[in-house]
Length: 440
Image 1 (cartoon, rainbow, N blue to C red):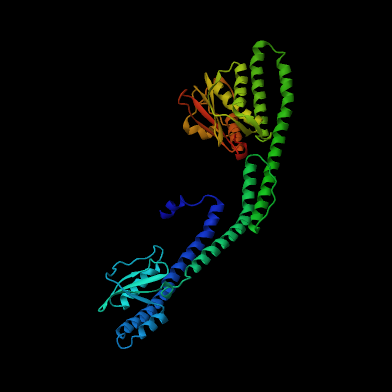
Image 2 (cartoon, helix red, strand yellow; image 1 turned 180 degrees about the vertical axis):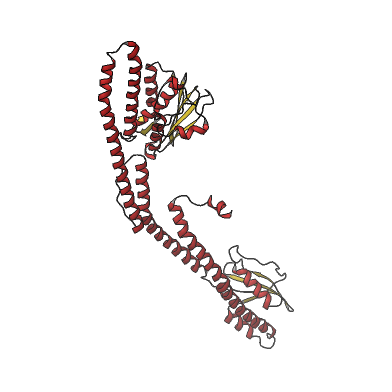
């Protein structure tokens, strides 16, 4: 459970995770070393220096006791130890220190442990120690240099650790970026190929990354050959079948009207099926990306349907701007959605929404719709859902939604099916992704 909770806060990108793997051990190592050094080295050094000064203060106090017999001894001792003594009327009882002076706790503890009569150790004065003591002869304060009780350059070790740690981390990051760059190039090439773009790519980087890159190139070449062979095969079959269909039309035209009309309807259905197969065989990658005005692009498609007296209209437009799409394939996908709507319903409405991340074309109708459990099945090629659609209102081969879904995937988007809340029929959302360079 802990790892599942922690997983939500981990970086998603490869750079972020690699940086975390690199930086986290370095930071933890520095913290462990710093803690060990403070507790073992600095604390021990401060204790030893404080105890040495404690002995010197004892020597000064003995000089005070001997001042009556040897008056000249105390000044000599104070000059030698670089200390000063002043008598005060009131003793301080509160220790003082600077907020970042952690060694002050050790100094105060050691003085109060080994020197009787110490009431306060004040370390707030820069570079000085004021030691307040209660003596039989009076209250006094002993002053001396702070450097005598703690190391003066203790911070240099931390500065060196932080500086060189940051420097080495930066160098490691540069090296890591060079190692991850071939992986990002491979991911970009694979993503582009999934959208129908054949970007130049050559394997590079470590041996494992080169092997993955070579495998990707082989896979891409095999898929391209397979697509080309499938297109040639279906195109050839469709072309070969057109000739006998033309002969059928000529032969049927000589028949009586009563016998001719059913046969002509069958021939027309066969012709439409061949055209649909050929359109599906060409795929969604037959044209290149181009910048188009999204609103004008959809409006033109709707206007073409209106010229055929189709019951379709623009319902809502949100946003504006140019988007990068494959015009021919995007138009085919929108036409398929509108065509399905007007075929199986009495009216259809189209809405357009443009954001920084995507273009959404929504087609809604008032027809019977498609049950939710058949949505995935409807997106498969050659899927025919007669129970959910009125087949008497039109005929099809089950490729319209499949082609629209392929077009959406080729543009980095998705085709979603649902129920229209306003009209009660099918709601189809064709979502096309927008790249950073083509956001308007």
